[in-house]
Length: 280
Image (cartoon, rainbow, N blue to C red; front, top):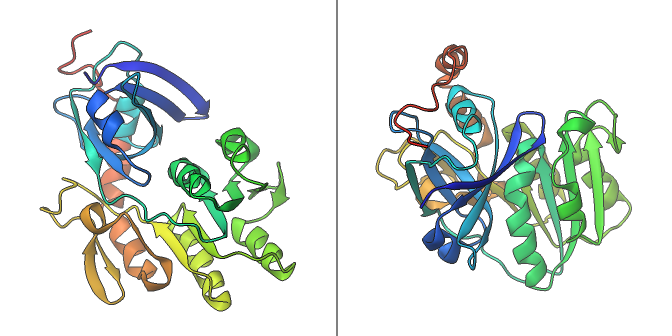
């Protein structure tokens, strides 16, 4: 259990990892996540369940190795065992046939979009996809989303691939062209999700976002992942992670995300010790 059976670097410092956990593989639904620790003394890391193979008993995770703990996770190899893995956590995504659904992923946020896009497709929706990244090398899952979407647009900040600009530029262009969109899902950096929400609010398009606040225990006990939605305090781990984008207080979310920025930068300078407590 919890053995890493496959690992692949799909973009610079971005990894796809398959871990054997039959129970989670059978139970997980679109939008849910797991919390794991790369070693017994490690930090708890929440990661979206990108996919699973119930017959093989494996789950698929995608993550960026940007901080100390995710670098420790990236240092593990096939055959290593993740000592702590809990899930599936969070509420499954509400799925229905909206008509035409537009799924938007910004950077690493494209990974959480994929399982929801699959569920929306299975429910009979026609999918339009928009994915963005800073540069061409950082675009992920284009092929996988392209297989689900009748139309897929790519945007890069530097113009090295696809549209030169932001995902919101592409969305605005589609709406200005008169493309009928009945529902929008957006996952990515907080400023991106806020910009999408501001745009779709003008058009009255129902919009859902998957929030990524600081999260510790994942069960609603610590309160670290609290967010403000519709003027009320919610816990992203048990009430979400998806919420009505037009009700989210993105400014407060951004402030809370930056609470431990200095500590995170300091920790990132420490070399990972991923093999602590592990037996090959």
